[in-house]
Image (cartoon, rainbow, N blue to C red):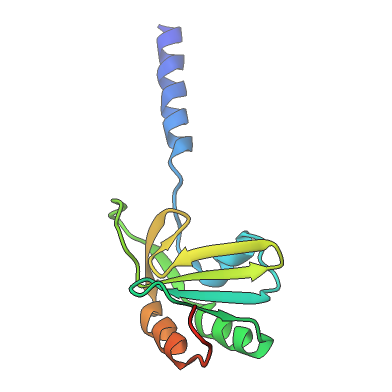
Length: 132
């Protein structure tokens, strides 16, 4: 009896530890958790065209991060896998990078508060950088 109870308890604890519980965080908290301290490059990729724009000027990087860093990401109830995305963003700190889309961070789907989509789309369209 004790062995079976121990076995059941072990399985339950294993299953609970295998499931990561996503929590509401700001974008800045996410990239700071990824050890991104000094962003020296930002790449914004348009998911519909595949084109990307790379930002390396510190003034533009600071401006972009100020627009998005305080946006909260709230885990969605439905975590079923999806395809496609509007914009993907990479924040680079030397060799370290933090990559996410506007609705997915580390394989978890989120809603954002305020809506990050128009902010990134407007910024991307206003960038006077040649698309690659």
